[in-house]
Length: 226
Picture 1 (cartoon, rainbow, N blue to C red):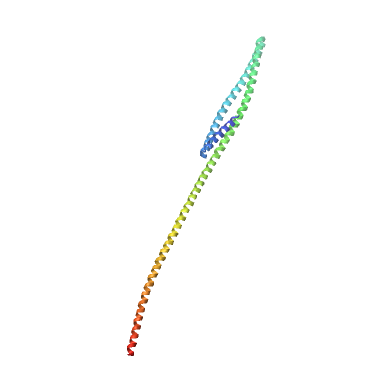
Picture 2 (cartoon, rainbow, N blue to C red):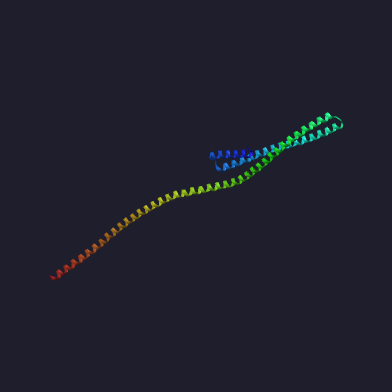
């Protein structure tokens, strides 16, 4: 498993753990960014160690090449001096140095591929972190808008409940107005009855006056007849 894959697995595990615990989305996103940044830091440390190993293997390769050349020169010198045994020994050591150089070269080339892959993975991870940071800001903004919308809807729901209370007040007001109208009607009826009685009293007085006048005329007629 490559380092980028291990880092991605770790990030997913941490994110799933946060989501399972129903954390605040904003906290989850910020923690995820921190985890990714930590992974980038670890990736840089791993890359630095790999580069150091590459440098070491390259130095070993170049050192063995140098030794092989030095042993060749010593073998030539031994031949010139007529020291064939020394020349043979120098050639054996030259061959050993060349073999060591080939082994170091193979390891160095493999380490160069490892470093190149680590660099590519690290660049990909850093790009993803930058993208995640941008998306985090957008998601946090969306979260705040959602919270604001939720609050508005809750306030509207409160107004709906308050509207029911206002309707109750209106019904009570209508009932009170009806009672007031009934009271006014009763008072009006009472006033009308009193006025009728007073009017009848006036009519009775007129009748009595008419009756007295009539009696007087009748009496006068009787007096005149006698």
